Image 1 (tube, rainbow, N blue to C red):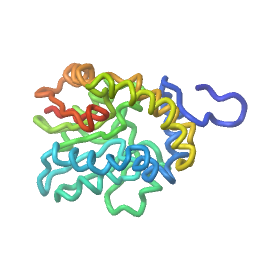
Image 2 (cartoon, rainbow, N blue to C red):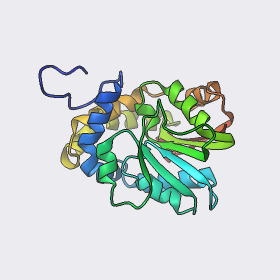
Image 3 (cartoon, rainbow, N blue to C red):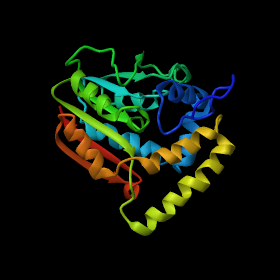
Image 4 (cartoon, rainbow, N blue to C red):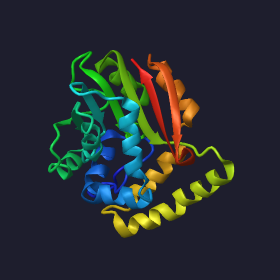
Length: 235
């Protein structure tokens, strides 16, 4: 959504202009964590734990948590004993998570500021959907992973049971923005959230994109009936 006049747009459009997306997340940063917990009915905590387990992290490994936001996901990963780095291009989100004691780096998913073969593992949770060019972001993740390195993507997906899928889509477009009005610091951003989830590829299509980026051993597991899915692969 283009800005008209001096006021910036309150939400990004599905074109996902990087400046608009970063500004949108800056605005929601202050209440981002609590809003996610409310909107997911507390499922977000379990999803973070499953992501950590899917990575199979070991003490001493170096792990990239891309689109880490306030670094709540990075703290969960660090429970493994691995050295976990939080990276995000929203400075507002990183600032909101400043109290969390993990390394933080300002980073654009399309131009990662890391050398080739830097990480044993990498993950991106609920962030790949927001990048302007998914294929480029996946290529960058493969570049910074060591050969054989593990990739795990946790992202909203498509419920597998058709009646439940219909109810869920109604919740996304009607109830979710209404609830966000009560708890979020920028409710308009959650209209974008609902629209971006509806437009996102399903489990099979995302698996194809990961393979096209050069990853192997691509597989996924559904969570909460397919509301979210964890895709894993090897570089």
